[in-house]
Length: 285
Image 1 (cartoon, rainbow, N blue to C red):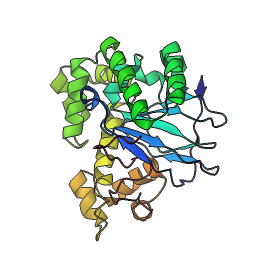
Image 2: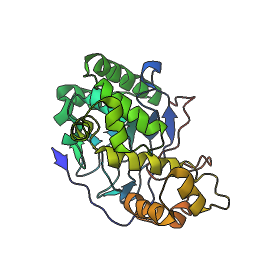
Image 3: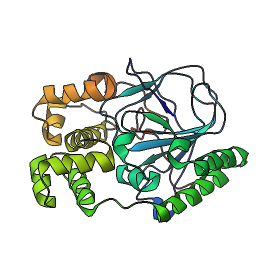
Image 4: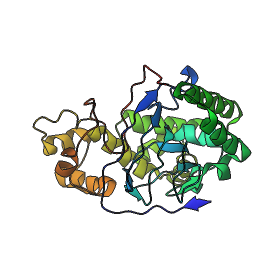
């Protein structure tokens, strides 16, 4: 079962109340670790700005119209999910190739969708959801997810080395490497690179590159001191400031100045909507 997502005016997302690092073998696959939400909220839209990570959510208390556990596929623009937030849920963000490996299906099948985890992983996902609801502490819940993902890791499919290298090159270049050069480096035609990239990451290489570059800009917003958008655009590899503004509109629904002015979570780490605050050194119970 899939649930449609819509675009609309951004609103403030919830902030996590609890967080933890995953098992050491999983840390490269879950760069943001685990987040747990514990407080009921009033009805709202949950904004999830475009990102190159794949979020997975398991609800610990029900909210209407949503499956108990779900994955949000890759997308090329910001998204507003219609409906109430669950009062309590556990969330993790998978590295794109980790999602391909752990979920075991072509990632372009999930693109732009919110998909019931049971439809992807079958009874194992249903059992995970039930066990998490029955588990009394957050420390135990995070450990349970560790064990579940480690089993998936052992059984999962391996990304092709060429796509792994292409993704690494995009990330290390800050999203500025030309796609033609990327295809040449991995020894594939441009057409084959696009097809395999979409299959294993859910996005075209050009879109993924734009998201990597954009996330690099987001990482600078915590400075919050005399932001020079023209300079930021040049340093990030944009053609000009207007180019940066167009990406901000597509990925957040706002101008750079409007987005930078929005509140940040307590702790001042500069993380914003959909890029959640993490305290990876401690698992709370």
